Image 1 (cartoon, one colour):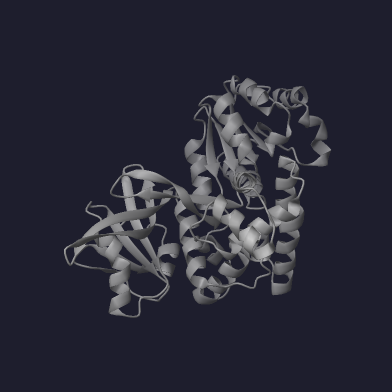
Image 2: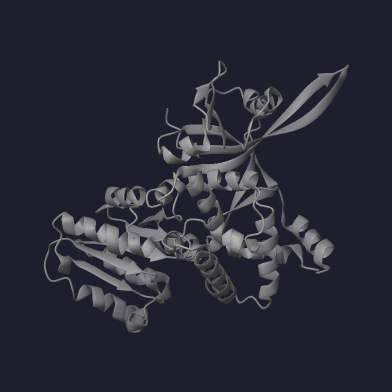
Length: 416
């Protein structure tokens, strides 16, 4: 099954021959290799790049074990460069090569090559790339299929597709499977033998049951405010297990580094500052999240919030949870309240305030969702996204309300 990933392909095309190493990152099985070795490869061929000028190697393939030695990898690439025409180097799972930074920096000195690499661990991005490449690399983050991409190959209507998507997620191979049993079995197998094992082995975790229990707790509370201390208390109260909050903090960091979860920080909209704790956590893929809790929890309100968060991230926004502190006078006494804006999305100079409201059946509910947005005095766009099939509307105060389907299926839905 062919799934076009035009958003990411266009990013690769825009970055082509810019002198930087293109670092394609993302959770395992999200389609990084397919993006580079199929879609981008086809683009190069269709634009008159000769096959022998595309140098590729998968470093997680046992046949290429010899290339995990830095000198061998460097020699492998250099021996294929025999003229002054442009060469495109594509390396999968490059972090498996020891001192890959030195290899890539050395290759970067060759004037007629353009380098593309993939990696599944953000440690290799956040530490090695930043410190070793010193501005010579750029990240292209790939997420599992968006709902828009999923629906491009789904054969049912958009409501049935929504149920399928929020149940089994957007890993491309899952989308190609034709039965619930296969999808559930695959996701449970992957979460146990790939995702958890990756985190355990990479970080030398001795007690993987604690890690799995933590993921289960987060899975059951997506979009809830929490912190390591609160999670430590939850372990104690629900299972009688004592886990230090510092250990939990480390586990959370490991899960973020493996792209399994993402942390949304709280931002004081009026005070224009971040609040260190508590935070919210969302899953990169809902199918993976559901596999940790045996597909038994289906609270669509929080799931929709997760979908919106990841979609905003996929579109290139920096996303925070908004907090508005209010001082109100009532009966000659001042009261202090805090209102929450689900998401404050920033991209460059553009900012959008977004509320996720599963349903707004009454005037009271509408006012409840609009109130935080009306307390924001700046002129940036304010949006409420609902599950209901509704026509896009705009109030006199400038608040836009749209359906989740319009938001997800129209890639420009926030631009007008």
